[in-house]
Length: 496
Image 1: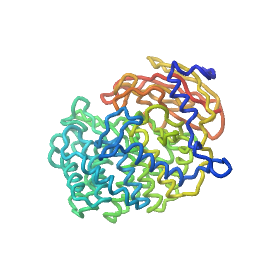
Image 2: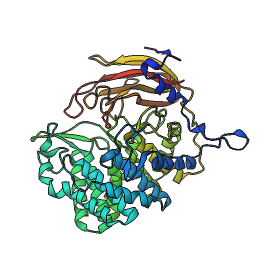
Image 3: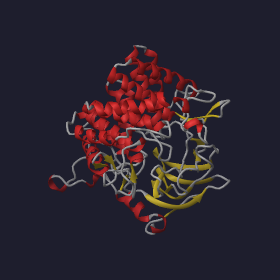
Image 4: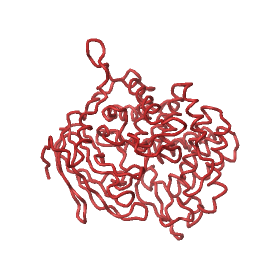
């Protein structure tokens, strides 16, 4: 149904947060000469992203704020915190900033020395510790990187390398209740091993990386396009993909892995793999304007994808990767809040209320890479969402699909992440009758921070020109990882 414009009475549905979305803009910088705001450039956005990273999200004493405002306990473990460490490494790589060394040494001090539990956590942490070592040369960082990797790849391998496809690892010891094998473990395993090989030149790490890479391509690679789904269920007899759940993190890791395996081995087949996946990301995982659209809740992080595309663009001299980054950065210039935080959707409006490490990491990385590639370039519409109107449309998915129709050139669905906190409940997304290429859809109840966040953007999408469009939400296919179906929106922001 066509919603009605709903100015004013926003309070019943997170009005303060929605008002903040409409008000937030990067153009709120201090005026320059003559009272005119200085122009927004990719260079200025990059500088601002670093300030946000170091002064807003870095809490001091070797810990990251996982939520801003600071409602979450600060930490330095697992993928949310680690994605911010990756961002800090990226800043050092791009600029050589000597001040990064002090923060990285502090992070080394608080990084975990031992790991138990799930298999993906030590791999995220191993990569972070290797990045700390590359910046600082601190032997303690290398010890932690090696120990984190070995905790799964050696000491506890017998808990994870089981089932019908033991070459890829369960996320939980012995498969847990879900029996899921996640590429969050496998792709990070490859990257962690390759980084340790680059640092130590120990060829055992290179062999481990190559073995795991081959197993990943056998079980996680989509059968029709060169993209990697994130979940495989192994019930002990068969291994079955959850089709086309193309997380940015794992596809970014596999692009990076192919590129650097080619450099380590001299085998160009790895490079062909990397380029094929990167081109498929650019071709298939964007909105109607070609801007990358991360269909997910909060458990995917996009820094690894941005980092991999930058490696292809800068060191690999791949023009399409440069174009992908700058196209996304052009849209994301309108996605940064007055406080410097980015939302999860590069093509969406600025975040309002709580921003988390899981949401912000991709935008911070994107701003930095665009600033390196084209520092004087100017985004076309940094206030794109400033004129958006909120349309109240309180739709809740039950058994039958729900849908709404509108006329405009951009839409952002608003709802509460973790409304039934904090896991089970997802839905499929169809835009103008076609399911999104990435079938992850909207996993609304997954809140990585363990908190409910009203006024959140659940989906954002842009078109080149205004038009009439219909978005339909259908029940998700139940599985042991994402649970059953759930979707509840309070309305949507519309740019006409």
